[in-house]
Image 1 (cartoon, helix red, strand yellow):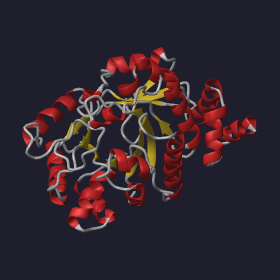
Image 2: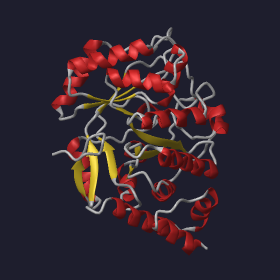
Image 3: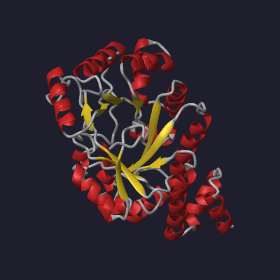
Length: 360
């Protein structure tokens, strides 16, 4: 039974929840890594591992979501509250360009008063500072929030943002795509269906997206797998002309100093469990070309092993990161370090952009 399932994986066929669980429960780590690595070579036969230069800028930390795993957010009245100024953006963009980058990963809190005009004005301002700038910006929670404030559809919201300069949409706010989990750790956020519906509309508009998963807290293995299946199925629905989900990035939850500490979660997933999740992701997500380990949360060595377990991308040098790092993650690279890490793992580093186009 297991051998038949492994053979099915090598043929890139769709897996059910039951088959995926069988792989997780019965296949050895070596078997999962072998199959995932063979699939990786089918997708990427050139032995190259991609990486990019971008900057993560948070436009505000004021957020009404109140997620229990987040120590970044605050209220409008907090002494920590801020809204990034035009002058600060100019400085950050200049630093990014000086390092050879041209993309902002632009995210922040769901500000109770930031409607569509704030974001369209911001995008136009950023493009006026540096016209070549690419905006990998917001995420489904912000799209839903803006749509609710403006009483317009997700599609209309995305069109207006696209016209103002949105280039691609991150997979932010997915956490675990389980309404049971979300009702506990992020009860003010939106439902699984709403998150997926935003991505469906983005794909129809030819907006390239990514997908994420944050695991290692109160979710079950079944919920992790269902998360993968939801993403795979939405990718299967995308129009033929659209890239849809171009990449998938799972990372482990860090919750030092957050409300999650009260759940007394004793042990974060070990390196082997993370590697197995990378491998399973490559197997189940048979229609998503790029898998990226989160070196920020699991460290260089584990991320390097993941390159032999289905992953083909090493992510960004992370010029700036303000959300995850304060909660217990501090693994970052400069551009020399990330290329060295790729070479140490036995691969050729290849710089890319957000569309996974190779750059010199």
